[in-house]
Image (cartoon, rainbow, N blue to C red; front, side):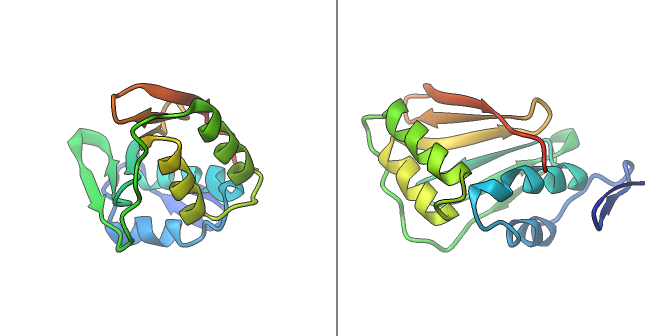
Length: 145
């Protein structure tokens, strides 16, 4: 049994639920909390997830094509047709420093032309992708502190 400060998982049980994911997400306040969230999601058995900026939905993937989709009740976020790597980098920098909350970051990502981000928890990377499928920024997910 593997543990992370109060979280445990059994390697044989890799089925995760919507409620487990929502519990993990409820602990995130700023981008500075993200590395800890990733560790918790990994312990649940999540290997990848995609976040769609316009409607806030997420698709979480586990082993053997297992997936859970979570739709959020949020206003639609417009996604700029003209993507800007520079605007995205600026939004990422201030969010990861803990200066913006998650909803603000999502709005700023939409303004920068991000359609979705793809989080690969095995390679510990995030790809921010525009509507044309172009990766604007690829970054490593830092270790939890």
